Length: 427
Image (cartoon, rainbow, N blue to C red; front, side):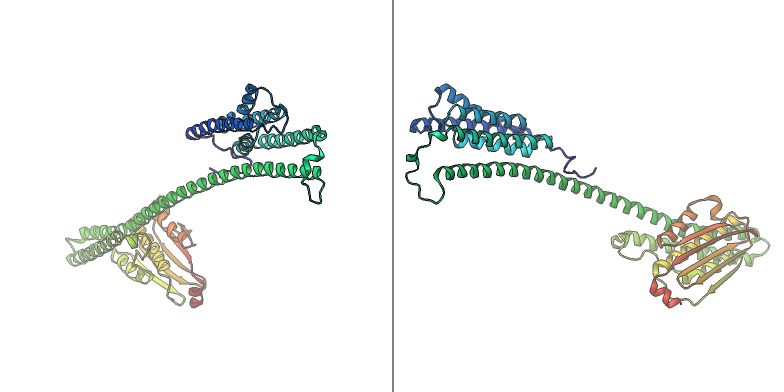
């Protein structure tokens, strides 16, 4: 969900509690306005001329204040109605003073703060303000002949009294209506920004949940990959050794004994690695990524090739370039790729020879595993082994090639980029 924009967002309607508050405010303002009308009648200060009957004064006073009870439910209609009632009351010389003026201010403010159609709300407010200034000019023109010189006996300023009175009235009304317009618009913008903040907070919460889910999924994939690498390799080697032992058990006890010894050592190594992995998983700091999760490295490839030789394969290990200290993660990834490739040769390829090459190049480390088997290596089945190797290479910004060789057999080659400082040492 995208954040709200100035033109696209619509403010949600008032709540039931806000509507109840408006009802009580409308009733309270109406009662106080009628009390104010009573005080004005008691003083006899009718500045607009002789007022109409008491019933008509009460009607126009209530009409200019009571609609506030519905100001947030129908802001446009309330603002228009109160404006008409205010002008009509003054035209009829009803002594409308502070509270009806305050009701007019509140109606304009509410229209600016709660109007759902922003273009209509702006036009209606401008029209109301224009009508009020038109009425002000008309009323001054109609009462200009009623102003006598005796009304300004105490005048002592440099500005002519009538002009000063007009400027004062206009200035007051400009400030009055400008503040009503501005405060309503500001309230609407503040509500929109609160909505945007809530939306952003919700998006942040969802993003955090997605990040946690991705982290859990990544951890599951990593654990699955580690289990596959550890268990599949050693179990495959044990299976091959057990088959060899079965075949030579009767006619060559020495070879059978050697195979059994290899099975024992491989099983012990597998159990040790599983214990190490389980220990890592029980450590929250390591599981969350705070520490290393693998102790294998490129320096152990020789032992890996030796174990493959014990299964009856002719093996060859070549190291090209000057070996240089590698980042632990790169070393682990290279070892696991070689391990998986060797496992597939032992399990699936029916090969007689295995060739492992490690190349320390200027800017990358390359590992190459090939055999002379049937080409049924990790690329043939498309299983988890090939997926895991690609994941390890991609995680380090590298690439992996796997497929049958032109002259027969299968080949796996991975290139892992080196950090600039490591590449410099290699060069």
